[in-house]
Length: 194
Image (cartoon, rainbow, N blue to C red; front, top):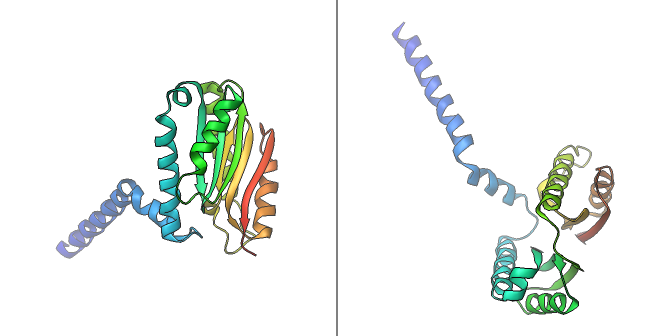
């Protein structure tokens, strides 16, 4: 009987530790997702630096900081700029600031000259992005496809798809994205690897 209780106690300890590992180690789960990223580690870090440097530079400009709504996304050195600027001059200024940041290979300028969208529209954009990402997890027809290799950005109903993809993966991802409600347009910023 003592051996049985010892075994039960040991099993409970292992199960409780396993649950704690899942709930408390989101960094491990995130790191596992990075292992499947097709970019080399140094490029992933470089992309993070591009984004951080861009936000720092843009926040140093009072007009951009107070009157614009800008988002920066870097993937393999390609840098997507989305959002709104109230004047063409501010839009040009934003692009000029970002294009001189170290390791920016290419700019995809999708800044719209208009007043910034409100927070409710930003929340709708976030919901669209989450639905699209969830739909990618249903892809089972492509053996090597990992949905985490696609960066999805939604800005005012326009969906941007970024990543290093094979052409057949890109087609499937675009077709799944088209099925989502509330999308005004799809813009692909893919870099094809085949």
